[in-house]
Image (cartoon, rainbow, N blue to C red; front, side):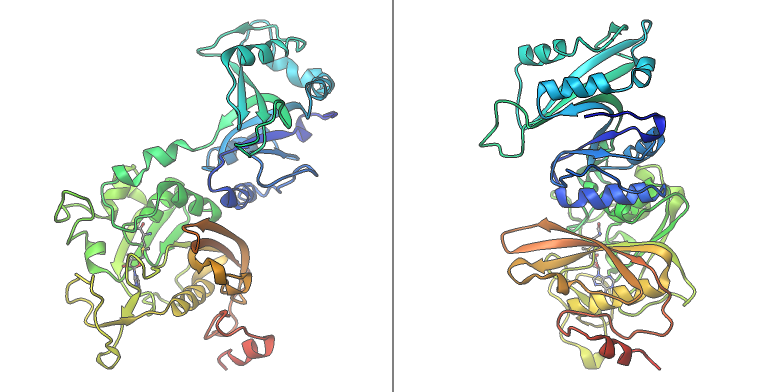
Length: 444
Ligand SMILES: C[S@@+](CC[C@H](N)C(=O)[O-])C[C@H]1O[C@@H](n2cnc3c(N)ncnc32)[C@H](O)[C@@H]1O
């Protein structure tokens, strides 16, 4: 396959992690769009494959994506690829020599790695594969410990662990450019987090959410169901100023019962600010406060660059809102808060999402994004269940399966229109709405 082109139109290969498969495409697209770059790939693009070829990008674009992605493992400048060894060889021989030359110089050092997806090679086989590349004009010296240039042969043996073919379905060879940010999953693990709760969001997913939200330096990000602030931690890592609200006094003030085993009460300084301090982003902490998301406390003019949140599903934490004495149902059993929430009543899921979308429509900047999790009962799910709003465009909808019957979907929406009038409700599956009905529900 010919790759005749200069610097401007080189091809790049992304090697993606094989977990959170659904979240990868919106993440990479969002990171490219932060640089106003399109997602342009080959005709044979397969979203489920761990290898994606990208066109029309520069090495700087790729480095920028890799500096943020937690779905991407590594990126390479693609020198050749094929479905057989001969095809790979032909493709490599057609790659412009002038593109290779700077990395094959006599006084340089290099090494070649072999990576196989869905197959483990014995050492001898890897060496044979490296030796078979000796037609390439490497002039430098091999240095396995600290080479200047790293090359990689990547082989794809499909995704079925029970039917691994003898020969790979596809093979690629390229120059390594950068690794992604998979390391953040370990270094930000909630297990090592100063302040955690029963529903603290997993580090990897928090970073994926921040990426889907296109959070960038100096943005102002808001989480209306902030809990222990895991999403604020991830957004601040990318340079955003962060703030949040939660109905739970104890969580906001970092007091009350601890969530850790072997610890009865939260210690002093177990709070969201301390979490940001732990990762060196305390200067980006704006504040958090006790507030009920069903009754906004914000001025009409308050504007956020992104709203990133994980609303309560009523499973590990109750969905509740403040109410009047007339409305009292009874306080949830697990409610251990103080008298700051005088009474509480059920906060139905449909209302939570209606309020959230309405809030986002009014308080996001144009182009700002709302990212949230929608709990799903799988046997009944259909796309129409995703709440819509006339001012918010649905960007992506990715499933994370939790059990055979339940999952949650990560919904990404972008504000594309200012609300001209106040919409009293969003469209919700319980009442599928026609355009006439939507018009009727505008407040006059
Ligand atoms: C899924 S948890 C969020 C967890 C958070 N992302 C974290 O990492 O810790 C949902 C949060 O919503 C809060 N909540 C429930 N009802 C609320 C309401 N009406 N207004 C604001 N917050 C509410 C709960 O107290 C809980 O902390």
